[in-house]
Amino acid sequence: MSAAPWKRPPARRVRAIRDRLRLVYGVPGWSAHGQPIAELVLTVLSQSTNDRNRDVAYLRLRERFATWDEVRRAPVDEIEDAIRPGGISKVKSARIKSILEAIAVDGELSLDWLAQRSVAEAQAYLCSLPGVGRKTAACVLLFALGMRDVPVDTHVSRVGTRLGLFRPRAPFQEMHDEMLSITPPGQELELHVNLLRHGRRTCHARRPQCRACALARMCPSAHALSV
Image 1 (cartoon, rainbow, N blue to C red):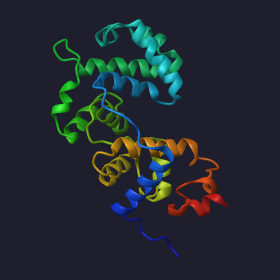
Image 2 (image 1 turned 135 degrees about the horizontal axis):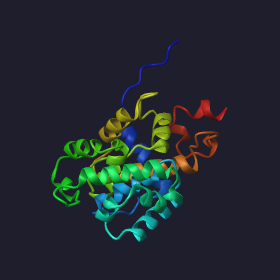
Image 3 (image 1 turned 30 degrees about the vertical axis):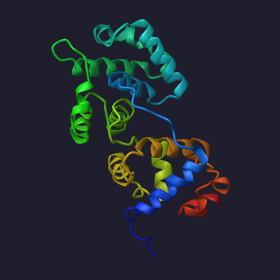
């Protein structure tokens, strides 16, 4: 017998998942930090590495160069040397320089104007930059500018798929659209952070801890994963 077709979860189910995660992890305290270029570079540095290495690479970059324009004007090999602790520094250094060159208008580097645009317009602009996809764009819009977007990383995609929030084997573009559709307004950061925390602490890619999972009773994947 074939599996039933996937249906978008009703709002009450999303709220129930949110409430159960809230009991375990609380409500993240947060306010937008207002530095979109910094968030953009930080997110590029986060690719294929852990938070510690990302942060070390970012701090070294800021210590080496006083402004983002200095980074833009620097030779790629100097940027690469600064961010080496973050891994795949050759790729990331070229990407950061290309992004900053694309942002620069008449010698000025700023993304503050994105706050005056719609989410769709801001997403489209960010995704037009070299190597920038929906997750990176969402990080900039949510964490830096407080705009309504929800980053979907590997943890959020895994937990969300197991919970039935996303269509099985859906591409990341679709998962970003779905996550934005089902997230209650104003709770974008809470759902992102708590799903991410749950993926890191309990709902692992291999050997998820289903028997100790606070979401096990509402997770359609729990029985199959725990056997």
